[in-house]
Image (cartoon, rainbow, N blue to C red):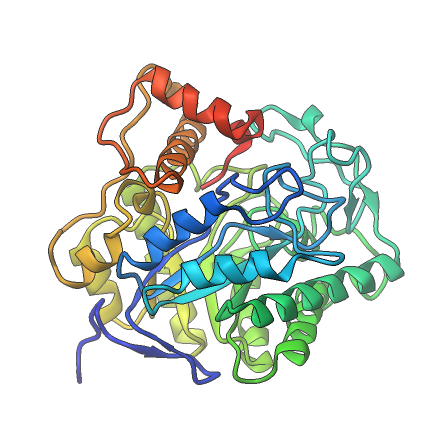
Length: 403
């Protein structure tokens, strides 16, 4: 039996072919214009990644509802978008012959209060323990049937525009406590109608989104989803339920499932050391592979090239996802697939701010992306002055950055 390597092609169920098994996972870039449109800086950042040899690049979350943003520096694809700006972004992001998937998202109750004081959600359940900043979010209200249907349609419209603009696929964000994930969790979805209760009902929203997207883009266009392996909260979306949802997604014809885990309300897994995340998600991937044949991308702590190759050889996964290391080395895809490096390195820590944990790492990644977007190289070591300068240039909402 042939051993799968990082440099191997991957044919997705829809027929699209990824040139290798390395993917840049989504990160919020915080580079949108004041009108939440793509910018030259965003184009330059994605040109750097596209020309760096990775097979699949996934954008940071693009919002499908202007009234619900993760941050004011997000790109929004809603209403009557300027197609030319998205076409320029897609051209830059595919300049290396790679695939470029647009990640589509709706934050639901994880919308900052200053964006919307009463955001929509499956149920009126307020978030807690979000970096001890629960007060930064408005109190959610339960969506009406009409609002649910309109939101499903908004995802499909956005996907159709992404296809016309030249993006080669889309990924629905169904993890990390955002709206699709909120519908899946019994803690945040307490509805008693056809959108809540049983797992089949709680999965209905995400499946409806994926189904409408498929109808909008056709059978040959890749449609992917990012899914939590679990949300690591007592009484929440569990690992067993996640496996059951994978069965549903396979039946629905989804082309690629990216596995992640946790949420901003429960950072148990997000804040674990890389080696522990790597081991956990590999074990979950093995369970998932035993249950379904759907192509799997696993993102969660991979750094060692040897372990990436071992995971691929075991067929537990099909694509290796990395995020923050791409802000430190935009040529990471080429360096890994050619064997030039044996390990993917994270950006350097910010001096004096290590106590912030994952938030500190995300801030550093945003600072590195700001440098790349200006045509500069990422730096090996960054002092506090340089970091805060980059953060201030991109706006205070960067402090909410994720990665």
